[in-house]
Length: 480
Image 1: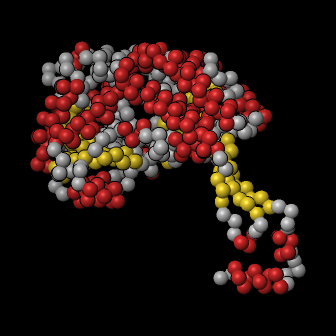
Image 2 (image 1 turned 180 degrees about the horizontal axis):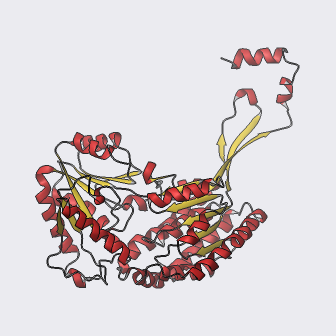
């Protein structure tokens, strides 16, 4: 179904509401700048109840937007990690809210020092189309846990689920606490120009630069969750069948339209043919009767489908071998169903080796030595994720210490994102800042330093005129 279905008139209507909603949320925050623990817990419980009650409608709406997406893809990729995040936050929030005691130096005694975590105010969240629940409600969880008001801009490519999310959240929260906007790119552009207290964007590196530029005009701090080309490195010590079983679900879930999906494979040069055969065997077992198999989803829209096809054609023209893992598939463009497709004999002149693929296309890059594979990774922009298939602890340590990525997963792929007690975020072109769990709470809080002095005013002893004994003692004992 759905590409951008919003009219210019609808976009203008959404834009007209942005500033009034923002101002009302700002006023509401000023009237209640520090919600209690109980209020925050009640917000999270209400959010969880709403999410579970709308589960079936969400599943149907996302499938409608994608043309076809498995209910299990939505449960595993969107709903389950979101519910788990709420449950984890509910258990941890009381501890997170406790002021953090800090040391006071002898020179400043008697006093006590602590850091309290104060809500920032109004937080903006810009959500992409690929996981519209996890990437909108996920950051909403930690923003509410930190005591903020929140405005969410949904993607123009998911109108069906946007409608459901809007209804779900408007029935759960007052508009002065949580408000949802949709519409096209013009709405998003205006959204980024609001003077948010923090802005979180998930999407492409290209758009991330524009978001950061717009936010800079208001000195709005940003968290950018971008992506890039996340490599999977298969080491010599692991069996190829085993290695494939570690990354293939992460590449086929949501038809590869995942920011942390493996983008390309680094494989020992002598095992390329074995890798191709193993991928085909496991893909066929996972998705038998592919054309009629509803466990495998479609590409979000015609524009993205045609982009992937064009990249494959270009690669083939430049000497690559393109290997769809389904034989004699009659491609139905209207269904936008595309099997996992391997690409060998690739080079850097091909677009699919330059830009994030974001689809079921998997280039394979051969290497001879581990050092060569590491150099290949390090010669390119730092990725959001790096995957290693190896049981050799020496290899694991070498890769961990000699490469850079937003996060690493060893002998699995993508599941690191669902670990609630670990920060999630990129580095360089793959993003900046962190959220999820405690780091999300910190991202959406101001760590406010507080020093408390009692009735004894020791600072008065150091008042001018200078040159008194107290000054000489201070310099003698502390200026060294």
